[in-house]
Length: 170
Image 1 (tube, one colour):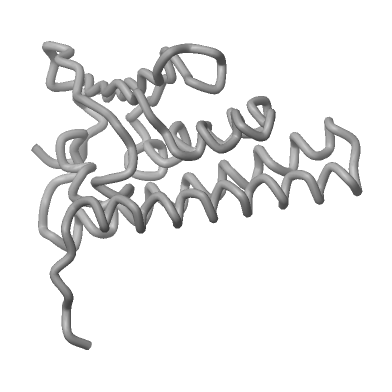
Image 2 (cartoon, rainbow, N blue to C red):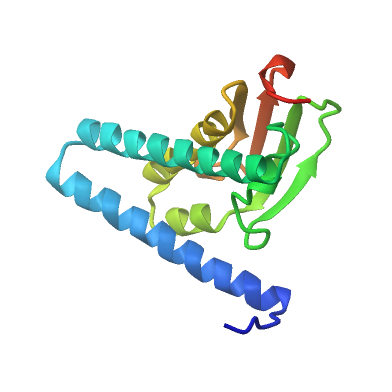
């Protein structure tokens, strides 16, 4: 298959289409589980699925980084190609530490869709994928959501902290 050159705006539009589809799939799956179960059971099922999904994402990122011959470090997580580079509006936050990485997300297509549907509670559960994916990548990494659009904040602040001894190779 011949590769097409695509401009950034077209790539962003394509990513947003996929984000809309994925957030819709999650919405309808959770709604279907709720139709068959009470909220407590549904929450347990959804949390378990998000945890397993996140761990898998982290392990896949770890595998990609390892295949590149790079050490498993906080700085190298990006090499695992976990998320698309377009579609979300975000910027790095200078933490002043090699062991802490943070970003501010002012636009998340998932959050936008779930807010439009009044699905904040269940959409917010999806965000716990971040905590699981960093654990799947490296046991010594902890992810925090200091702010979240689905909690009513004006942005998401995602902060990842790693213990220096947790990074396998320096």
